Each structure stands twice: as C-alpha cells, then as structure tokens.
Amino acid sequence: MSATLYIVGVGPGDPELLTMKALTVLRQCPVIATPTASVQGHSTALSIVRQALSTVDLAEKEIIDLYFPMHKIHREQGPEPLVVQAWQEAARRIAGLLQEGRSVAFPTLGDPAIYSTGHYLAMTLAEIYPQARVHFVPGISAMSACSANTRAPLCLGDDMLAVIPATFSDQRLRQVLESFNTIVLMKVHRVMHSLVPLLRELNLLDKAALIERAGMADERVLTDLTPFAGEEGCVPQPHYFSTIIVRKR
Image (cartoon, helix red, strand yellow):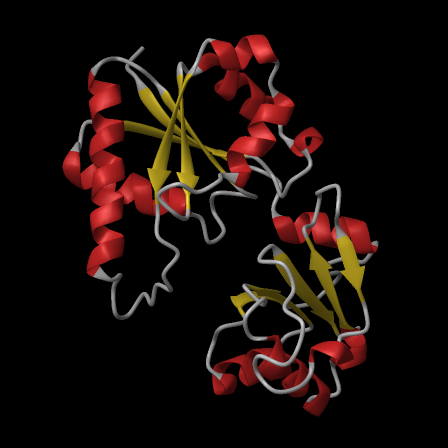
C-alpha cells in the first residue's frame, strides 16, 4: 500500500482517551511528525503519544518536529506569509517522506476536525504533492472531555450548540451568546478581561464554567469566573489549554 499521511486526533490530554484506531496508526507508522509552536518548542501532542506507546514502539520510530507559528488566522483575509511559509516547509518535508515510501503520523490535540493545524497541513500538501494519500483519524475533542468532567451535557433535545473562538469581535460574540443555548468558547486565555464582563452583562456568568487543561493530570474546573474580571494585564490568565462552556438551560 502507498505511503500515507495520517492526521491523528490524540484527544485532549489523557493518554487513555486515545482511540484504538489512533493507537494502531501510531504503532504502524515509521515516522511521527509533531507540531510545535516554536522552533525549539515542546509538542503536547507528542507527550500524549509518549505516554500511550511503549518504549519499544517509540524506539523504532523517527520523530521529527514541524514548526507551526501560532498566529491568528482569519478565513476572509488569509494567513500571514510567515504562516504560509511554515506550512509549505512542513508539507515539503512530509512529501519527501511519503515519496520514500514511509507513512507518517501527525498527532494533533483533540479532534482534527476542530480548529486543527492538521487540515492546513493536508491542504498545503495537496498543493505541493497532489498524489499524496491523506487519512484523518478522529479523536475525542476537548469540549467532549470538558462536558464529561463537568457532568453537564453540551446539548439535549432541541438545544442549539455553538463552538466559537472567544477572540471574535464583541458584537459577533454577543450575538452568539444571545442566540444559542450552549456556547463552547475556545481560545479564551488572552481575552478573559473582556469576556467575563460581557458574560456578566448578559446574565450568563453563573452559567459558565472554565475548564483548564481538560483531561490532563492537573485539570481544573472553575465555576467562579469573577477573579478574571478587570483591566487587561491586571487579571490572572488561565492556561493556554482552557475552554469555557456556557449552558443556559
């Protein structure tokens, strides 16, 4: 069978939340290519893989780092040149491995269908090497883990669910918060100073829970978000891996 790039969802942090399919693919691929946010950065996805695979499994693999700068991407504007360059360099490296006949696993946090670098890599690879075989392996999403750990459903019956970055403009964010029954807010760590007052204004503060490092050993669930209200730079900043669930019903 031709070499394949596998975009593998490895879940939110708990290695026991990897699917059997993900484990099979990770064990079979001779190369694991891991995303890092800086040139000498650490890959959280790889740390989950290391906990899930045996020492023997890992010893037989080549592990390479792929740099993906953490810059905001607006679909209507397109990515910055630095981001495009990083995607292209990563795709060229993957293409070279595939052309050598070596399958590659690309582990990505949560599920690759939800705000994942994996799709950008796959799209760029298709432009550089159209013959490339790409397969996606779904994973447990962070919001699913957050729902389980707070023992609250994301939606029931005729509930409407929205999943959005909290970095939306205030007006767009307000519209979503007013229109949906459950709102999952991603990428909240840098906007708490403006997000919490908005939730208070809409009488949603007591219906919000912040889950920090969902599925990891040091996970925290916070239902009192008032300490995060205040001037920018004067309030505590939650961990990068933080999600807020607002459930009205």
